[in-house]
Length: 284
Ligand code: NAP
Image 1 (cartoon, rainbow, N blue to C red):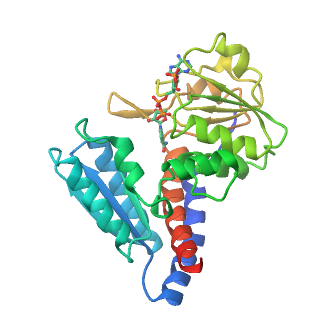
Image 2 (cartoon, rainbow, N blue to C red):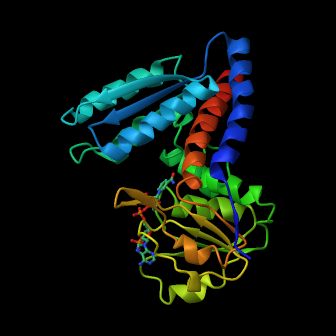
């Protein structure tokens, strides 16, 4: 029997409904809307789409967005000045810098400049460290969304063998940490992993974040596995995942589609992080 589709769009919409009332509660209590600043540098076409989606999500939920479209040739010091300004701005609860930045700007330096409590993406070293140590922190959006998607299937994470393919700082490593804190037995695979298939065939839950179109084929998927496809690969004007969907759908019990799986959840978690930061700052 083909896998059930994990509908990230539908899950996103239902979480956004809950967030709407949280955003309203904030406004009623504190007399202003929750605010998210979105900084984009240059004109990367993919970034334009992502930023548009994030601003639209803010509008849907009742979060005020502050949008900054900076020219490609802007000096790093000017980006830093803007971040300082936003750090000090009491109407701004979250700051997001859309990546990638132009090569002339040091990404690490820029991300480190955002106050950890306004770090809507959860990329600041203090938040990454908090995740590692199991301390309260802002969780990175895509990994947090992946956990929600898995939980929505009703399949328990605790005790399961989970294989994550990819060890990036924004997806692979943090999602592995979150899965570990959910008591999964986690294996992280990467480009130097020997005999990848022997690992993936042992995965009750398989999370794929490689960035190679249809990299995971059906013969790499264990019967009945939950498959989470993080990949977003553009080819022939279409979006493809990292998993060969037509093959994997015949093996898995649950699978995320691309598009409509992980992507919408990433945006939703960003807004959720911002609303939570807003309350945390006021209540602490
Ligand atoms: P990344 O930084 O390029 O990392 C890719 C990872 O895949 C690396 O750890 C790499 O291993 C590993 N890898 C590459 N080739 C491999 C191979 N042959 N076998 C096993 N592992 C291999 O990518 P990322 O930022 O994590 O993103 C991954 C994908 O997710 C991309 O398609 C990206 O567009 C997508 N993405 C989607 C969302 C969303 O919201 N849906 C968010 C973020 C990313 P090494 O470390 O050894 O090089």
